[in-house]
Each structure stands twice: as C-alpha cells, then as structure tokens.
Amino acid sequence: MMGPVYIPLARSFAVLATLFCCGCAGAPAQQDAVADDTNDPLEPVNRAIFDTNQVFDHYVLRPVAVGYVTVVPDGARDAIRRALDNMKEPANFINNVLQGNVSAAGTTVARFAVNTTMGFGGFFDVASEVELPRQKADFGQTLYTWGFGEGPYIVLPIFGPSNVRDAIGLGIDSLADPTRYTLSSGGLQDVSYGLMALDGTDERGRVIDALDDLEKHALDYYALMRSLARQRRADELGISPLIKIELEKRALYDDPDAPPRNQATAPAAAQPKPR
Image (cartoon, rainbow, N blue to C red; front, side):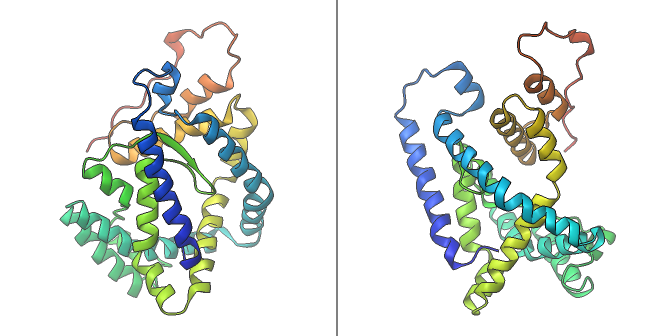
C-alpha cells in the first residue's frame, strides 16, 4: 500500500498530468495520423520513461517476482492476493458511491464484511461463494463517469502505461484509500510500505511468462504494450470490446515487409460483452 513517502510522488503525477493536459491543449489541431490513432503525442518522452522502467523491471522487479513465485506456493499466493484485494474494498466502495452505483456500493460493503470476518481477513473469498462478486472501481473510472476525457497517453515512472485522467485518479486513490490512511495515521507506515511492495510483487509474478513472451517476440514492445494497455482500459470502462491479443501479435510480431495475410483467415474481433 502507498504510505506517506509516496504521497509526494502521487501528487507529482497529478501535477504532471495536469501540465501535460494544458500543454497538449495548445498543440496544433492537426497532428500526425499515427499519433492520432495511438493518442501518444508525447511518444519520445514516453519511450524514454518506458525504457527506464524496463531497466528497473529487469534488474529489480522481475528478479524479486521470480523469487517470490519460486518460494511461495500457488495456493498461498492466491490467498495473499485475495487478502490484498480485500484491503482495497473500502476504496472500491468510495468510488462506487461517487459513480452513483448504489447497488455495487452495497455489494462491496457486504463483500468486505463477509470476507473480513468469515474469510479471515479476506484470505478466503467466502463472499463470491454467496454471490457477492467484487465490484472493482477506481477514481480514474469515476472521472470517466463524470464525463472527463482521458487526455493523452502517458507512461508513468514505475507505474507504467496510463493517461492524464487515470494518472490523476491514481494520485487521488493513493491519497484517499482508507486502508492506507488508517495504517499510516496509526504509525504503521512500514506495514503500509510492505503491503504495497507485496501487492506489486504478486502482480508482477502473475505475468512473468506472458511479459517475457511478449517482449521476446514483439518488433516494437513499447507500441504493443501501449496498444494492449489502452484496449484493456477501454474494456474496463465498457466503452469498447477488448481486442484479442492475437491480433496485436499479428500486427507487431510479423515482418512488416512480408506479403499481407489472407483476410479470410484473420481472427475475428471479439464481440462486445453483454452488459
């Protein structure tokens, strides 16, 4: 979880995001077609940050995640993941309320109560067994619900792919998370830092093989991650179907000078999920 040391960093992200937004507002109306398609007018800066993040990942995050996965059994890691997610339920509740989603907010309260008590702090997901599914929400999603545009694509130090709206949302979530605030105000900053590190390590450990494969085969890893990140976020917001990763592999793994594929054999795009 994010403690006081990280609050200035979160605030910096919000300030930088606002500056990016203002700077882009004064940009010429006509931009490069590729930049328009990718929403990435800051690509040179983003690539530099992305490369720095990759160095940090290769020498710190990935080795720690590999060690974590090697030492901690699968069942224990799943239980830890459930407990960490349970600690985020108060923040989910706040954002569901701010979005006017009363039903989701009520489900979140019930879910948190059940898993915290009967699930021993969330190590067991009893709530899902009694049909109380997780209602994940964040402040970036809240801003979207309020009508704020995403702004340009940006890459944040350590945190990775984002956009102006979600970067601001990240800062607000970091400051307003009741669990983080309670731990920090109670003098348990070290616990807060440890939980944040554990959360990031577990998340990284779950995508070791997938990211290794993508990085190994992609002709442009930055472009691939940008595309997948934007598609995933759009899917989370319910504004477009998540396009299959296989389509991205065909677009970015293959030799650009190779003859075009037979369109009849190309995989069909995913259909919109029923809402």
